[in-house]
Length: 209
Image (tube, rainbow, N blue to C red; front, side, top):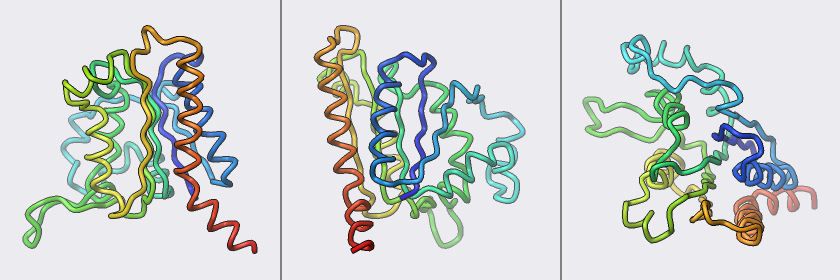
C-alpha cells in the first residue's frame, strides 16, 4: 500500500492534527509506505494563475508548476484527506490543491471526438479516505448539502478506481466538543482506518505465509 495523506490545518496543536496522527499511525502499523503533504506548513499557494489556466489542457506543460504533487499523486494507490470543514466546504488551500494538481492527463481525461464527458484518470487509486471536523451539527450540514464531503467522496471518488474502497468520519459540533467526544471520535477514526487498510494487511499476511 502506498498512501498519500493530504493534510490541511494551519495550527499544529489542532484536533485535526490528532486525527492526522491516528491516520498516520494506522497506516504505518499496516505496513504502508506513506507520504504526507502538509499544505499549510509547506505554504502551498492555492491560487490557479493565469499562466496555469492557459496551459491547463496542455498535458505536456500543465504539471510543471506542481510537479512534485503530481508525482506523489501518481505514486499512491491510497489517497486520504484530513481537514476542517469551514463554511460547509473545503478550506481554500485544499480546494486550491485540487484545482492546481488534479489537472487533465493526471486526474481525468478531457472530452474528445469519441467521448463527450471526462473520463477517470486516477484509476490506480483503490482507496479514498476523508476525515474532517465540522462546527455545524450533522443535520445542518446535511441540510446545506455537505459540499465538502460531496466534492471528495463523489467528485474525486468518481475519477478513482471503479471499486474504490472508501472511509469517512466527521466530528460535528466541534465548537461545543468535549474531551470525551474528541476521544470517542479518535477511536472512531482508528476503527475506520483499521477497516480501511484491512484488505492490504490481509494480503501481506497471506504473502508471508
